[in-house]
Length: 122
View 1 (tube, rainbow, N blue to C red):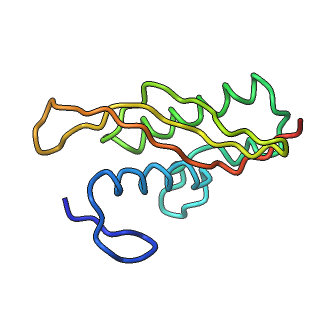
View 2: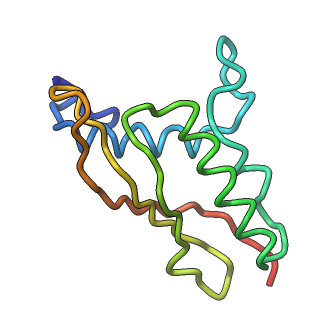
């Protein structure tokens, strides 16, 4: 697979491209793309909400919903939060299977981590 890094313009491998795609989906506010209004996630709607179990479930649901719709190469099996800081910044770790497009039916497990920058009110 030939893929290009969105920041540098250099070639990247399939896993780096998947990571770039997942990050783009999660960090794009739903409704912000003119010709594709339903692209992205609802994570931005969760900024500055109280940091509690309800917020965590909303983050998990928003993440899985967006990736199921927009990233067919990755099947999420687990969403974990990690590195939640005192000021509410949060990092999520996604675990799932990457579908191998070269060998249909074959998958490999992968773990991806992303800082979300969602600052909840503690």
